[in-house]
Image (cartoon, rainbow, N blue to C red):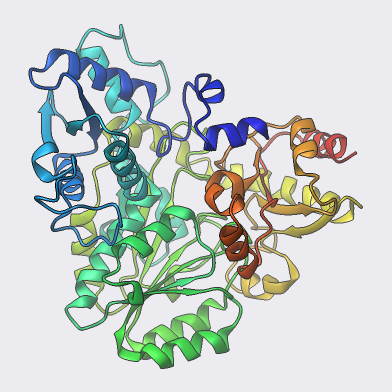
Amino acid sequence: MRDVCGYEEKDPAVVQHLTSGYPRFVVHPFAKKLAAHFVSTTPGLTGRMLWLVTSARMASMLATHLGGTDLPTRDPGARTHGSGDPCHAESAQLFARDGLHGVSHPESADTFARAKVFLQNIGGFVSSREAEDGLVRAGLLDHEFDEDFFRGDAAAETRRVLRRALPGTTDADVLLAPCGMNAIWAAFRAAAELQAARGRTVWLQLGWLYLDTIAILKKFTATPGDYVYIRDVLDLTGIERIFAKHGPRIAGIIAELPTNPLIQTPDLPALAALCRRHGAKLFVDPSVVSTFNVEVLPHCDVVVSSLTKYTASEGDLTAGLAAINPSRPDAAELRRRIAAELEPVYPRDLARLAWQIGRTESVLARIHANTARVVAFLESHPAVSEVCWALAPASRDHYLRLARGADATGGMITFTLKKIGGLPQFYDRLRLPKGPSFGMTTTLICPFMYLAHYDLVTTPAGLAELAASKLDPDLLRLCVGTEPAEEIIGALAEALG
């Protein structure tokens, strides 16, 4: 736990040991090395920070963001031309070399932080495989890492498998992204522009969502009043009151099914009917359990999901999905607009995904068998206070109405301990792999609120916000893998004492 806090506080004693990490939060070593090479060999870049990104379009968006113009953001750190701030537009320069694109700016802690968070929020970092190829071309690596790839049409193979989980779609409805957040950003951006032209600017956040989804809604809605947070995903009457209040100004609603990290499932058919009556768009993100486990597309306009989870079960790439419901109003326009907003998936990443994705159902079956056993152990242990998972009683019926099987639960479990202040001792004793991702063959556990919302768990106002949303700051997120269940349970039993 000291290392978790040290990472969040950027303690040099901890950070110096961090060689890599989740690639939207920790810039990959290949990307760092290639950027350093370009800085040292490109006239005019000495003393500047260089970010390598997914495309020329993303570079333009980042430069615009640092200049504080055009892109509709409510980022309080944004500046306008002539503000005197070192990150005005003239200081952010576009970069292009050897087929790669980026943005450079004078070295500044403030500008660095704003650029990094922007790319993190909307999924704009260059792929590690693309950076690796750049290093090979530059003679800084001898060869690419030796790994298995799908040798045919990787995009077609990926869509073929995904359409098994998205009945009624064509290949044109299944849009691929370099990560889940880029899919969410593209869908939000496309629908926000479409709905704004109709006078609809209010966006609803249903429940506590993943941190970057929350960031997109907070930063890129038109005004603070256009962002509405609905705390209780199970309070349909309360949701109906919000629709009645905002009426024809509601552009759409973004929901996770189930939510992360409380793993609650809203009444999706009722929510869909409400959106249809009011002309609001409904986006559903089933990343917590995988779109292979739940039938959600018939109820919404767009499914947005991370393919990093479950489909890329080796944990060695990021990818995302935006799937259009072809029967919904504006389907053709949303398809066109979202496709235009998405960033390209690097071909080698796509080939690697296509090699793994065919195993999704078999990996999920093994995860499901383990998850049920781990839940039963945790629920029966005297040291455990509360266990949340897809079949928790509060929203079990809502989930089973959408599930493709009674055991199709995904692998995420969150739980809290009865002993106040017992988190550090448990976490330090626990002999399981620790990390912030999920949906892999490898089990992972983390103190989720510390990694995702450290600013909230360390301030009185933040703790009050968590309490209002019924979130325990010491909540643990366990994402079950495919190891023998006895090994997972044994490690938990040892740490719980």
